[in-house]
Image (cartoon, rainbow, N blue to C red; front, top):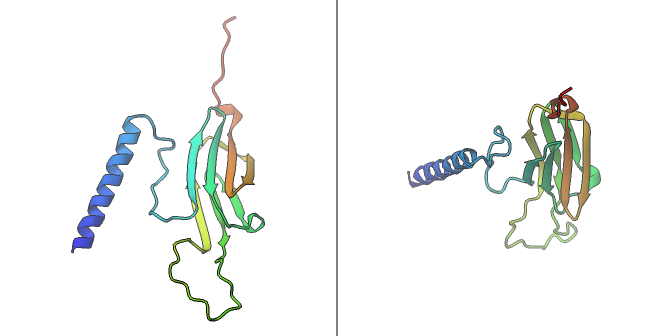
Length: 146
């Protein structure tokens, strides 16, 4: 009984916080849904006038095994982060394991004006940056008076 009351209050506060961000004009993309605490990888998402920028925090992930896909306006990040405990010693005891390990998949909905053919991904120090350009025809254009 008490668990449901606390979950209700957490959800209510999350929704109020999201509504406040939207009212203050700080909403980055209106269709990004909040995710549960501990979701891996954590992301930062933002936009400029010419691109959408996604930063995924993936320390300990082998970048060569990371799979990044774009389908329409959906960006999918999937891969695996291995556990750092040696396998050869059967007598190893783990007292606490707070770091996520295992397979992950994260799907991010982006605005409709992104160009799926103009995506660049780089990774440095455990931070994956995916830069998706906006389609040329959707960018604002200055019209000169003749």
